[in-house]
Image 1 (cartoon, one colour):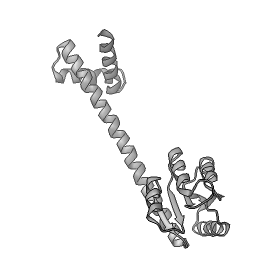
Image 2 (spheres, helix red, strand yellow; image 1 turned 90 degrees about the horizontal axis):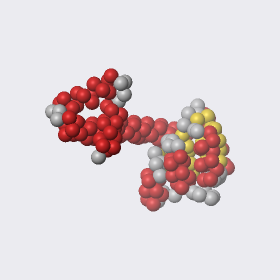
Image 3 (cartoon, one colour; image 1 turned 30 degrees about the vertical axis):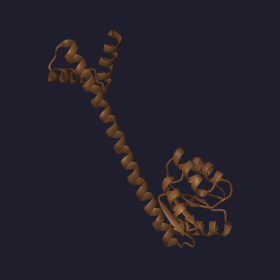
Image 4 (cartoon, one colour; image 1 turned 45 degrees about the vertical axis):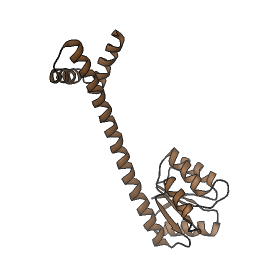
Length: 190
């Protein structure tokens, strides 16, 4: 994986880079503050981010929120503070794994794998939600267009549906597009 490290302690940052390289990962950038983490995440498009929570400027969790808003990526938060407030903020910011210092290479590798796995599951769910929202919108449009055809053309429900379906097929458009056209035409006539 291509990994961005955000850690303000240069010795810990170097140790993380060494551990990640030994595990076969490429460190695309190493930064020491939250603003630089956000900037480098946008520039390098890493596969994952390993980020300290307490850093100068904006902290690691604020940076994680900004990175997630701009381009979601698996993030592993590392901190010396094992406080529930940090964990809660990390969850809200989209952090997928959380480690307490000191960490060894195996912990980092497990956390990265967990973060990438959770991220993949989240992206799958996001795609599915988008697909379902689109299907629901199509159904809503088709139902409205059917109602218009039933009222204005006196068609039974099944025939109105088949008319929309045939028009979509014959014109190589989606049923949603055909339904929108019927709705727009009806709105103009009102």
